[in-house]
Image (tube, rainbow, N blue to C red; front, side):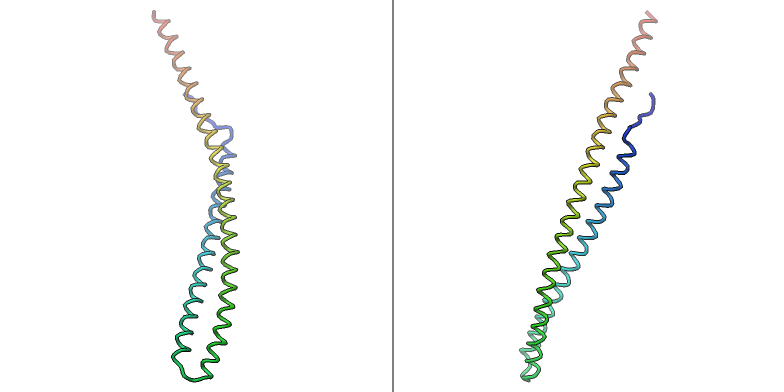
Length: 139
């Protein structure tokens, strides 16, 4: 039985490399989105801490400073929400690219499997012909 050689093996290897790169890019974008969400959570916790701090003080100047800081925090929270949305869009785009690259790889892989099945059937036919020839020679 001769060795199976897939004529698109190099193309398959390149597609697999592209798929892996796209998958890694998606993972990076997802990690960045997670970090942005974590930062938002931190800002919200900080806001709650400042609110608690402001309510516990009777000094008017501290309360006034607290309200000013809360306004700044609220602005940062709004900006952070926008950053999260942008980063999640980037992550979604990266995932779509990875899925497309994965589909391309799967197409070539299916072609390889089909070619291999054809190869195996042809090799079995050749083997059967040899066996049939041997049988007829012995008869």
